[in-house]
Each structure stands twice: as structure tokens, then as C-alpha cells.
Length: 513
Image (tube, rainbow, N blue to C red; front, side, top):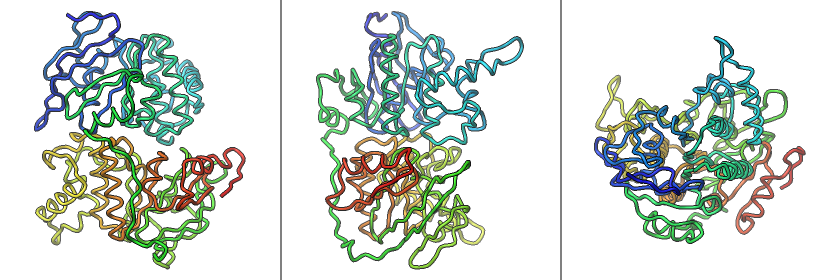
């Protein structure tokens, strides 16, 4: 029996055991009523696992949960939803072949006699998306939306629940622009004013300090500490998360990039969009051998589309791409990989991993031809290569034959990076490589990027986080509305210049350097 009027849900000594690992170890957690309850920890700390217990997606191996003074058991998500618990997943759980309104109302359908009342569904979708300041036409297919727009649809489908008491938000801002984050925070404050309790999981510590009320920290599946946000500083969070105060720092380069040759030159690259205009608008840029080139911009600036053109996903693009002094004929992804290009995509789940394969096969699949003798696969060579990458980029894995989904989000992202490195690329494209990765893992990824550049690999990195792009990049291009609005290097790389360039020309069609 547990009864505290300030606690909407209490978890007591929760264990969760998977084959080969203990994801949660005697974790107790209080969800405070009408507050933003922040849950943080490094990848693999058990945050998402604990939330899956509360949302009815998984069941505890041991321990108890209480609501309203009574013990509760959630055998599935419907049982949790009946108690007013909703969850916004880190990995989007939308149906790409269905419309926006169908995704929002799935499981909450309204009927008109024997038929679904799609008119009400469309009107309801318009209302909730207007509230989110994201007026996407409700008949739009979700598969046609960008990741950030899909994230807003995911949020919208939870806000239509009338009896909502607890809303779990697992990395809800990982795909959102700064403006969209402000809208989300406004909605969160409205929900709290209605008495709704929010669990907020994020790796963006500045956001936690801005929106959070109470912080609970997990490490290696165990409870470490908790405190009210008003009583702590960022350093306290970081030290409890990773045991040391980790800060981003700029890497000193041993290579003289002033003398480095241009390995890649992009001239007047354009990608037209339906209805007129350009997703990529006459972009000119170059990449030096051994350089870490940053690309910064708001959501919809054309960053991912630029990468997609370079990887052969949009053969309809126009303009010239010169590689090692020769004009490239970009036709398809396989051809670009053969030429030494590899893309680590923004959305690892849908574009980077094959969820039915194990960790080893996900890492080796793009370079499989390297491990064949005629028609036969040399499994020993394959596993040796994968083991080398696991050691090199510190992937936390008990057994590489386990399913890819047994890994935490950050370690899944590292597997995608390993897959790219095994193709032995000369130009590595990293689209939001730290999305959904904790501070410790981010630092490791940045160190890997620096190490690869020092070895002569040329990298282009897209990041939405100012401090990251400033720490990791030797030079930065800023995109806005598909155009290059700034090129920064050396002392000109600062937050003010980056932000001003990223907003340049929005809504006007103009741009400035």
C-alpha cells in the first residue's frame, strides 16, 4: 500500500531482466502530480525500459507499481491508457501509409452509425495541430512528412486523449527545431496547469533546466539520485550521470587544412520540390581531405536533402558534383558507396537498421561483399571486422548475435556508424549523429570523428545543436530555406553568427553570407 497525494504513480523496487542483461535493478521512482518529472541517464541506463513498464509495453520482472493508493498491473498499453497514461516514443510509432488524421485518431476513433466519422477526425486533427502551431493538412500521408513533422503528429495523437493523467515524453525534441521546442514547452505548461503529470526524457540538459521541475538520475539500471531542478546546476546532473563533468571542447588538429586538397566540390546543386521552388537551392560548397565540415540550419533548411543528393537518392537533382577533380555521375546509393561515400542517416530506425537482423549482420550488411569467397560467406572474417568496430567505437554489447533492438538507442546509432566505417569510405556523411545519444556517448562519437579526420577521412556532419557543431567542425556552412546563408571558420564560428545565418532569408527568399 502506497498513498501520497503529491504522487500520481509510484514504482517500488522494479527489476527488468532480459537474456544476458539486467536493464533495471531495484529502481524506485515517484511521479509527482502536475510536474515535469525529468528522467535522465546515459544510454543503457534503463530510462526507456522503466517508461515501458509504466506505459504497459513491458512488464516488470519484479517490483510493484501504485496509483491512487492501489497496486496496478498493466498487461498492455490499453490497460495503461485506461488509467490515463500516454507515451510519446523516442522512435516514432506512426503508420507511414496512413494519413495524418488516421494516425492521430487510431485507437480513439469516432463512429457515425456503423461507419467511422472521418469528418470529425479531420476537424479534430486540424484543431490539435493548430494548437501545436503545425497546421499540416490532415489528409497528408505521414510517410511524406519530414521527421520533425512526424514528431509533432506523434505528440498530437497523445493530446487527444480526454482522460490523460500521465504523459511520458521520450526524447520528444530530438527532431524539432528551436521554434518547435518553444511550442512544445508551451503545451507542456498548459498540460501541467490542467493537473497532468509529465515524464520527460531528454539528453539536452539546457532543456531540462528550462522545463523540468524534478530530476531523477539512473545509471546502469540503478537509481542514483533525485532533486528539484531549482536546487541543482548542470554540473550536478552531469557528474551523477557519468561520474565526471563532461564538457564539449574543440579538437586541436594536427593536419594543416590550409594545405589540404579539395576532395569534393558542389556547384549550383538544386533539388526542385513539388509545387515550385527548391529543397536545395543553388548550393555551392567544398570539402577538403581530412576536414570535418559542419552543416548547420533549422529544420527544413535542406540539410538532409543535400546528403540525399550526394548519396544518389535524388537522381533528378541538377548541378555539378566534382569528386577528386572529376565530375560525378550520381545514379544510386550502391554506386556512391562503391565510390567511397557513406551516409549515417538521421532516422536510424527506418533508414539505418534492419530490425529483424542481429547486431553483427546490421553492422556488416553494407560491406558484405568484402567477406565472401565466391558464393560463400566467410563468417570468421565478417565477425572479426565487426568485433574490431565494436572495440573501436565502444559499442556496449553483451553478444553481437543478439537482436539489434536489444541495444539502447545510442548503441544502435553506433552500430549504424560502424556499418558505414566497414565500407571503408573516403567521404562520410553524418546526419545528426548524436540524435538520442547521451553526453558520454556524444563525446565518444566526437572523438571518433576527430580520430577519423586525423587519419585522412573527410567528413560532413549535420547537427541541430550549436555547441556540438561548434566543437566538432573545422568549418561550417549554414543553410536556410535550401540556400547557403553563411560560411564560417576560425574565430567567426560563434553562436550569434550561426543563429543569425540560420534565420537569414526565411520567408523572404533573400539570403546573406
